[in-house]
Picture 1 (cartoon, rainbow, N blue to C red):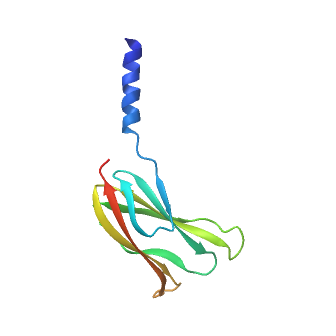
Picture 2 (picture 1 turned 90 degrees about the horizontal axis):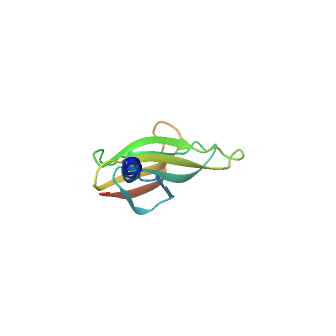
Picture 3 (picture 1 turned 45 degrees about the vertical axis):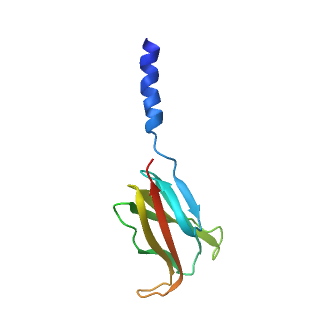
Length: 123
């Protein structure tokens, strides 16, 4: 009986475990993620150019929430890096966002634009 009482809570914890975070490397088109999960969009960039990936069209905040951006260090000056934009899927639905590779400065022009759709499925 004691063993059964211990196993039931452990089984419930396993069922309630959050989905593993997913990383999309240089994605295109539509991303599919389960609700209540975290996901990362990893985009290639080059150190020292001043260009940076910026979220220029926000996703619907009721469906997907932007969390943070981190840039991996370059192995050498001017070397390749990755900018990693982290998001949280909150609720089932579909939303879109635009991420642009923007030149330095206040009114920097976008050298590239990435239009993405995110489909969040019930988990």
